[in-house]
Image (cartoon, rainbow, N blue to C red; front, side):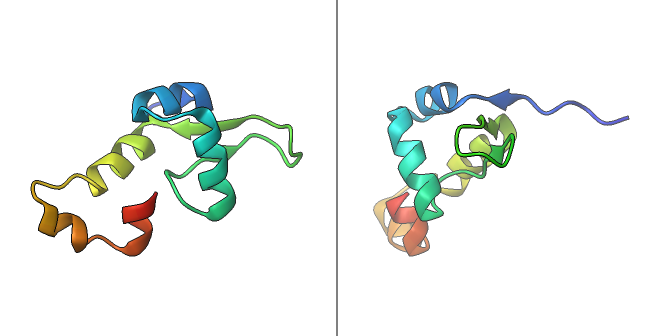
Length: 79
């Protein structure tokens, strides 16, 4: 049996990350930020983020000192 993934809206994801929803849109267009799901082929179709993917993205960027930050891949530093 599989468990359902909790899907977040862009607004919910932005709130969790402490950023504006527009930032997520910019990141998506640049291939940055957490993984997302497009709910259809059209531009206006909904975008959702799996909560587990967002939390994993946060964990990948968690550092305990500044030298760890400098060793992150360039994309991780700027997204």
